Amino acid sequence: MVIKIIEGEKVYFYEKVTTTMEVAKQLINNNETGIIVAKTQISGRGRYGRKWISSEGGLYLSWVIDKKNKILDIMRISALSIIKTLENFGIKNCKIKLPNDIIIKDKKISGILLEKIGNKLILGIGINLNNEGEKIGEYAISFKDIKKQEIKIESFLVSFIKEFKSIFIHYYINPSIYLKKWSELLTK
Image (tube, rainbow, N blue to C red; front, side, top):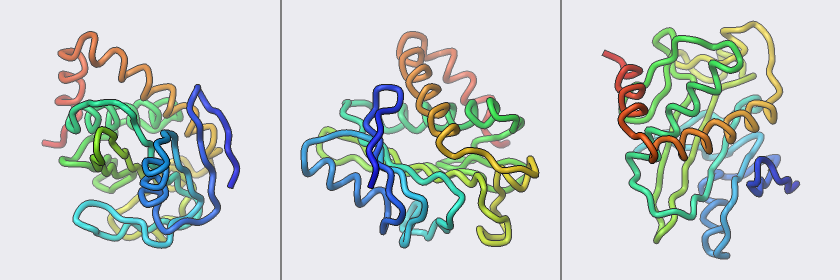
């Protein structure tokens, strides 16, 4: 494991974990916060325990948030942050498919999972970046599939953290702007 401070957040980088969510729970047990990132997950999961294929090349993270926020607010902020980060790297026209998917071209590029444990939230995110399309399933797509090039995963992570923090602050200052953006991005 390697620990780095990125945008003021303690980030723990692992080669392989069962799930980043499980490692994040260990942080909570130690009364800590931070972001867990893994190259691969053995038992990655989505809603209802559905399997999330976590082959090398994706960004798999769980962020322990030491704030008392509504789960729906964090879900919205996360979705907007992922879409904005994808836009920063040239992926346009992503949509939000309720309750927790980011899609493009009718395929899933990212999923969001939230768990509340005590007064903390664990925000779990999987984003298909450099994954090979055929390895992530027929209803999934990756950054590499779309752009025909690879991306530096850590650069994407840094951009995501910046976007999340910015949107988080502004969301609570003027929620109507962000609720409007979020609703415009919903699939019809």
